[in-house]
Each structure stands twice: as structure tokens, then as C-alpha cells.
Image 1: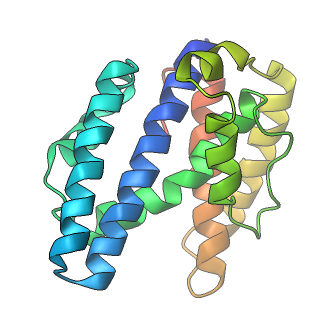
Image 2: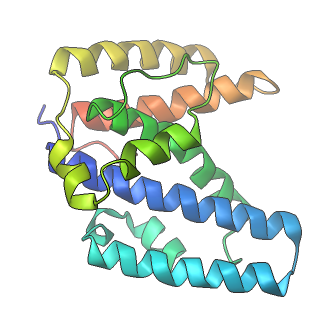
Length: 188
């Protein structure tokens, strides 16, 4: 199975980084209600994100659904899209691990720490440096991580309550690792 290149994984990680950040803004808008000041801040962030996606040549790594979400006005995301974007941090963590920007993945009972993910991307100071520093892990490491994710995904699929968190983590990691094994798979 052909694996995605380090550049493709880097671009997808950057797209997920933007998606998770925009999702957090959409979440905040939903939580705090119609506050004109927050909405104005969100709109400024949306415009800057759009510029960043184009300037850094990341827009081409967006899926069609993500492109439609990014094109929508602040506060317009449906709740399901907000929740989905928030969980994408688990896929982002896997891609950053695969590129060796993170040494390890958290255990399956722990969510990825957003500050760690942000730092793994921004510590280089430039997107070009982030891309240049990424080197894909060996295929056997990806395969081993995929086998673990597959087991967790199979064991937790459809769980509810507290176990729903582990199920969501497992699903996102499984999705990302499946794409890392085969670039023909659905991207995370």
C-alpha cells in the first residue's frame, strides 16, 4: 500500500491544526452566546486563518467538507461539525507523532493535550521549517500503532458515557493511522 509522503502528512497536519483551532472558536461562540465583541474577534480570526491557509499552501489539503466549513461565517457551524473538529486533535496528534514532532502518543484513556500539539507545530517559527523538520516514522512503527488503534477501536466502538471518550480517541487515531498506512484511505 502506498503511504502518503512526509509533505502530504505535514500539509494534512497543518489543515487539521487550522480545523481544530477554528472548531474551538466556533465552540466558544456557541457557549457564550451572541456577544458582538467575541463575534468580531472570531471574524478577524476567520479572515486571518483563510489568509494563512492560502499563504502557506495548506488549502489544497482540506477536504471538501472542511473547505465548506472554512468558507462559512463565524458562528455558522452546526454543533456536529464543532464536535467533530474538536475531536480531530486526536488525528492531529497521530500525524505529529508520525512526523516525529511528538515523541509519544498519550495512552488511550487520555486526550491529546492541545498545547502540546500547538507547540509541536509552532516551535519551528515557520511553516516551511515545520515541513522541513518532519520525517515519517518507519512503516513498522506505523503498523504497530495501527494494530493497537484497531484493537482499541474494535473494543470501544459504540460505547457511551465515560467510555465514549475512549471510543472517540480510538476512532480518530484509527482513522489517522489507516491513512498513514494507505494514502488511498479517507484522510483524517
